[in-house]
Image 1: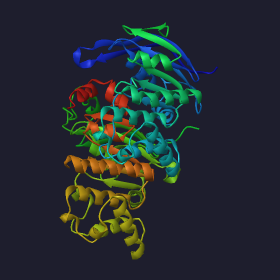
Image 2: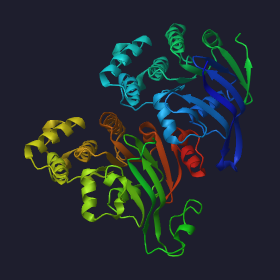
Image 3: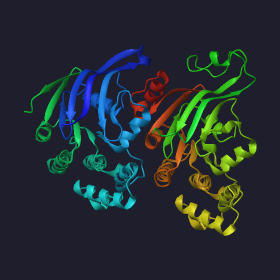
Length: 237
Length: 279
């Protein structure tokens, strides 16, 4: 099977200039490989470095050393740790999705527009994008009466489901999920699980952070635990 | 093949004063000043490199006096830089330095290739001319002469910027701040510019009007594919609108990169200070 993501000796250290150049280690010597259609889960205590690893892959954090080789369908193998900004913008629009814990959106942008624009940025046509966006919002059980409302007014669970809809609709080649079920009740988790399984079948590779171990064991193929910034593979309990 | 930038700026310098050989060495973020101690010249911009790609929104942030607005003024020929080059891909095949062309060609570029929206509507509008008259002024400068077509285009632009059509013949001096900004945006869009320069366009507006303007900017970029340079000292505005950001201090670019990276993992001491000062 094709390797989609290969992380080698990834280290991230934050330098706090205002505090006498104090160094904070985010993660160190992270090594793992993910194949196409595989989903790996990352677990660990709060502050262990889980989100740091994910944000280094998405390049929200600049890795201090190591490589993150992504097998892009459009650009071939690229090292996300070293790629120039334009390359990162292109792969983000087309191939890599990120589901953050919090939804950030313009104050007067409707829920439907938010999802539609993900597809427009990818180059899809307006009509097709609207149809797909409606189907996705329906799948994530966001009531139709909220589609033209502003997400600022949504509940935590609705915001998270909208976040999931926005990231999953473009069917990215690589999807990074930061606690995708954190604010969801049991009933709302079912469509998330269904969508993850569907994306896996269609070849999306995923790396996700979980505190919800029961949900995680049903969807991931392998599980890595991170402790004091270091990574080790553990079984799926 | 690698995409070529729509606008490429290299080593742009702008100083106010006579200047001396030590100006650049004695100013900048390292000494926290843009005033040369040897000759009192103000170094507004120094060594600025900037690439803007078609259809993208790029943000420029920094405190007051950091050189953001001077940079914009140089790009739209309100001010002439003292050194540096800039190339527009859709002008002379991107091979001619636009700072070095004649005044006539600069005027043509401004009328045909650029749109500018200022923080203060007084700078971008004739407040005593009608809303339609302001838009017509830009269109006439861009070689539109048919009155009927100008009026149709003005109505189209009012609709795009969500201004009531019945206000077409009203004077902008009787409009609210948010509406004046919309007229400015309509005027700037009149000639279908590939590049729009927005200088602190939401500063001073109340939050609900600010939200409407931000939404309008986003829609313009999404639907018309116009590239934009957005100058703001408000990080929230930059975060919402842009994918790439430049941080300026004392006339220099101290950091640039993906907007989320600049905000969440700032590398420069000054950017860290700015981010840590956000409310």
